[in-house]
Amino acid sequence: TRPSTALIEAGNGADLLIHEATLEDELKAEALAKKHSTTTEAIESGMKMEAKFIMLNHFSQRYPKIPIFSEQFTKYTGIAFDHMKINSSNLSRIPQLL
Image 1 (cartoon, rainbow, N blue to C red):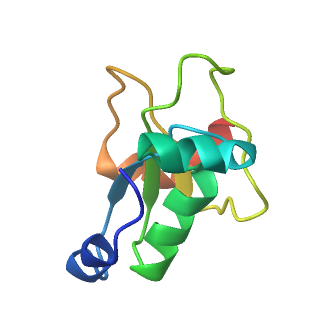
Image 2: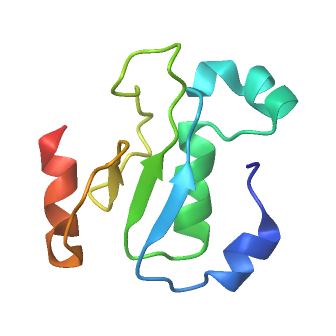
C-alpha cells in the first residue's frame, strides 16, 4: 500500500498504526512500481497522523529479515513478523529489541 492522505486523516491521533514497509528506502522506485511503501514512507505516515506507536510489517522475503531503518526510526516505531503477538502495554519495549 502506498502512503495515503486519506489514511493519515482517518488515523489522526491513533494509538497504533500497523503499516506495511515492504522495501528499504534505496528501493523506492520498485516500491512505487509495485504499490508498496518503503520503511521511511511508512514511518512518515505514522508521524504525520501523530500515531502514538508505529508497527511496521510485510517485509519483502527477498531481503534480510530485519529491515535497515533510516534515521527517522524513532523510539515509537517497531517491527512485527508473522504470528507475532504483543500486549499493547508492551509496545514501548519493541524498539529495544532491535
